[in-house]
Image (cartoon, rainbow, N blue to C red; front, top):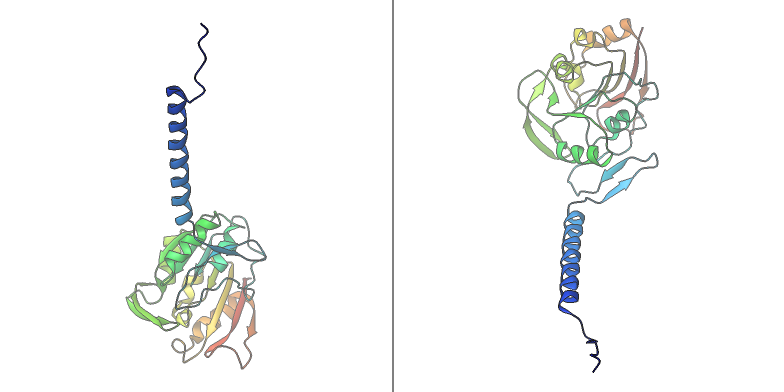
Length: 233
C-alpha cells in the first residue's frame, strides 16, 4: 500500500517557522529601540540638521549676520557662544579644526554635531575673567566656569578665525590675546548688556585689522551695538 504524505506541517517546518518568528521579533524590537533614540530634526535650506527639543531659551539655527565665506580649509576656528551650533557646524563643513564654547546648550549642541556628522571640540563654559560667574540668558541663569580668550585658544590648540557672541563678555578680551588671529566675527554690545566698552580693545583692532561694523538699527535687541567683521592687515 502506498503511504500518502501528511499534508500538515512537519516538526522540521515547525522549527523553521519558530526560528523565523524569533528573528522577526528581534528585528522589530531592535528597530523600535533605534526609533526611540533617534531625535526628530529639521533641515535648513543649506542642509544643516537641528534636533527638535523644547527649551525655555532660543535655539538659533541661522546666523546670516556672520561672514564665513572666507574660512580656509586649514583654519582653526573658535566659536564662542555656540548656542546649538548654527555657526560652528557650518564652519565644520569647511574646516576640520573647529572648537565651540557654550555655557548652557552643550547637550543639544552635541546632538546636532552628531546629526550633521562633523567633528567639533566642545567646551562647556564661557568667555570671561577666569573665575566662576553667574551668567543669565533668555530667563535662565547659572554659575558658569569662565576662561580668558588666551586659555580658550590653548584649549582649542590654535585660533585663526574667531567668532564671538558672548553677550558683553567680549569687552574682557585683552588685545594681546588676539595675536595670531587672522579673522574676527564678533557681536559688540553696550550697557545694559555686559560691562563698559573696552576702548583699548577697539583701538587695537582699528590699528591691526581692516574692519567694518554692521550697525544694528534702533529697533534691534537691547544693548546690541553691531557686528564686527575684521581681517588682519
